[in-house]
Image 1 (cartoon, rainbow, N blue to C red):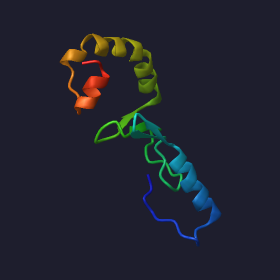
Image 2 (tube, helix red, strand yellow; image 1 turned 60 degrees about the vertical axis):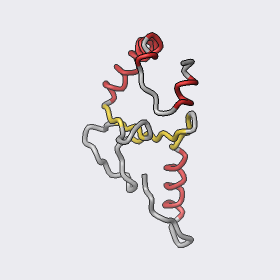
Image 3 (cartoon, rainbow, N blue to C red; image 1 turned 90 degrees about the vertical axis):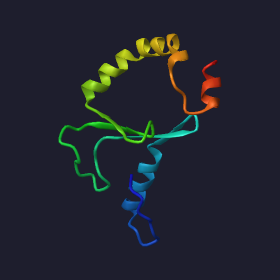
Length: 103
């Protein structure tokens, strides 16, 4: 994500690119998640594999290939069932999160 400050003198294209970048940021349960396709602010490829990264889940982004994301998506129902079954063994960052899980 670009942290560059935009000015009045910036081109329309630069402003529209920044708006598009900001619109990719989504909020879920008070946390921001950003999904990127491995392109830098100039549209140049950062990763030859075309990997997709999700930011905001933890300290570092989660980066996977298309196939890996597809495999993870198929595992979500089983993962959610496992988490529900073992939630008493799981750790939580805050008491509020623990209470939201019904513990």
